[in-house]
Image 1 (cartoon, protein in one colour):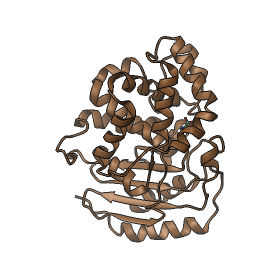
Image 2 (cartoon, rainbow, N blue to C red):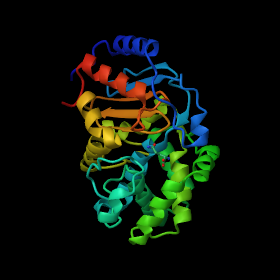
Image 3 (cartoon, rainbow, N blue to C red):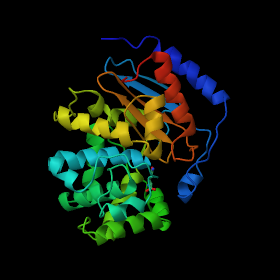
Image 4 (cartoon, protein in one colour):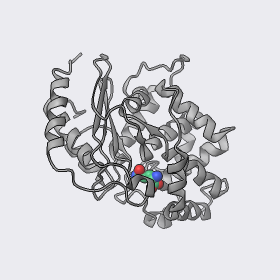
Length: 308
Ligand SMILES: NC(=O)CC[C@H](N)C(=O)O
């Protein structure tokens, strides 16, 4: 297998250069609790199938994972319901912002993909119908796949987002008007805001994505999360839709399946090789971490380790 030569030195060098460079953009302003986060945080964690793991900067500091959670909720829904979920949500890139309502009218309330807010809300509706105790069962799933028992929701961030969640409330109600939400929108949104509020650090996020990196992955209980074909599909959706209207750009510059969140985190996966998580809170105009995008572009260029 191709060894990732000198990846520690490369990470250290790029980290240093980026931290000395500009830090454009701003933390997510529309969620009051996220707007207060120090924009100078910068952490990276690298994990590979060869276990030459390495963290630098604020890799142990927890942050709000926001939309990165959509990969985990989608994976659990896929595990429970299989291919039937694709009748409720599409797999096409949208070319629009993560919280956009525009295409839903012509698409009859079927969100284009599960990483748009509308799509993730539909996935929450599916899970809400399936799980006995949605909040408890979901966080147990995240703890089990990551092997990190201390992961939890942030009640403050969930409340903070709910207090200004006008667009997501509109999305959920609009989708319900087409019959694509089964439960009470208030219950679905309460679940959605909590899932987005989960706090994890860079290390924990790479652990939580290990099942998408390593085809042989088993949880501590000895079960696999998804089969190989399902994991391939989740990676494919991350590749085409993980960065909203910047998915093409991420694919072009970085060349890995990945997922961003407005907390400033990005997780990217090279199947059967490595998983990397970068966190820096300042976002560009598409809601993706400014330094995170820059770091990953440099990393895959200098290591020559993209999937292409
Ligand atoms: N892109 C994101 O991370 C968005 C998630 C955020 N909770 C929202 O619904 O707006």
